[in-house]
Amino acid sequence: MKVDGTFKYNPENFKKIYQEEYKSRITHGFIRSELGLSECIKLKLNGTFERWLYLLDKNDNVFKVEYRVQTALWINPETGKKNYVSIFPNFIKRYCQPSLHLLEYISCHTRKGEDVLRHIDDPEGLFSCEDRFVIAIKRIEIDTFNLNYSALLNSRYVEVFNRPISVIKNHVEMLRRFKSMFTLVETARQYFGQHLGVLAQVNTLILL
Image 1: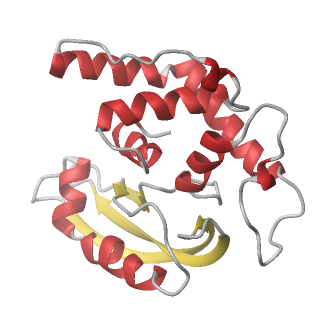
Image 2 (image 1 turned 180 degrees about the vertical axis):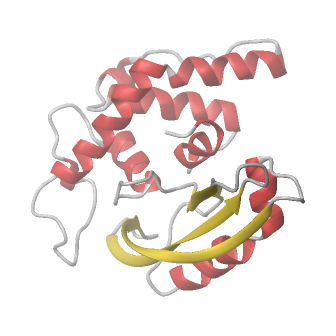
């Protein structure tokens, strides 16, 4: 389950955005709608757990925040079985500390042979090397190849507009270090009609 968020944050306003764009939207009605649960099913918000998250601020500086993920419990009235769900904002890939916004920015700016840290500022010295970012992006790229996310977006686009998304493989794309991620971002930009924050939208639609 996902909740929308903005593309870039600042440490000072993250708590406010977290409350307004995340916590306040998590209602029983929202959860029932997302899971397709009927009104007769008992539902309970049963707590939160802590996670660390790396975000990009408006000056393209990386910073770290601690946030709490809301959890919910619902009981199957026929079997009495308890079912648990964790509700993540859509700009977070589960078990991945760098936000999808940050990974999107990296994949769009890093050229072949370049170090990821060349394109982001790390004033707090949070990272000694690029590995954490590269591992996260490579995991998504493997799924992008195996599950063909770009084709899924394209097929849905054809259903609505009766024409395919046209993503031309040009020299700019070939120069990207993370070609599969870059292609997915370019496809998603056309699909959603926006330039930034498209990986979060993909995550809402098909779960990265």
